Image 1 (cartoon, rainbow, N blue to C red):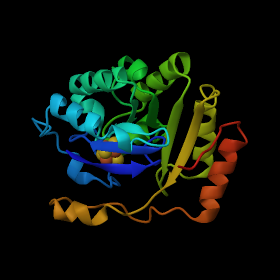
Image 2: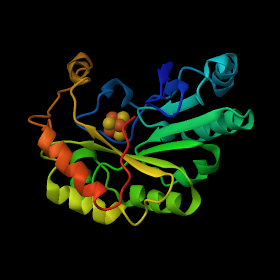
Image 3: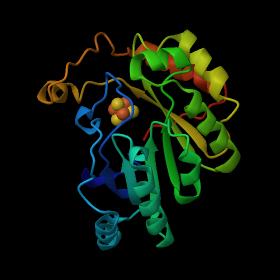
Image 4: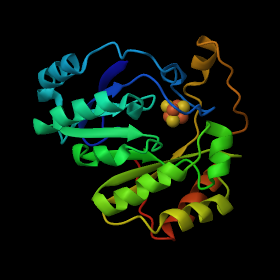
Length: 235
Ligand code: SF4
């Protein structure tokens, strides 16, 4: 488990961000491959974490608070739910960043002020081929969020050869536009290789090739989404 302060990228304001260990997916572009391995223990109890958060409260300026990310924070679901409830009960802003594949995610909606959820592919088959899981549960969680929440930030990692063609953009728009409403927004994140060296450092092979998207690809992809009334943001 790693932690640190970050401004505005993992939710509003200045935030204490916990990177919880373990992920159920294995995306070949992952920039935190060291976070994938599912550990038996997080290295810190929820009580200790709660004390740390309370001590840090004066740092949560500009609407900030605490963000739980990963890896995939819902891998440690019960501990996550417990700490979110405690923090929320103190009036501290809570956020999670999730890959959206946990069927229990709606249990966290009321405890999470700011929800960031990936939607990596419109095609379940393609997503399963690359990451090991399809998008059925992600879609179910999106539908549930559309019914129960007033805020959601969806994120698409835009990757050449995976999901970045204009045909892909049209398919994303067709699938997502029905659920986007006031308070919901989408961020398109261009492929990068910031975590590439970490793969070999952790004894794993980085297999992504020719995955960068051009400015033209990016702009065209975003235009198609915007033209389908999907609000785009950049954090
Ligand atoms: S879901 Fe996120 S943390 Fe998990 S493997 Fe994919 S990119 Fe990495």
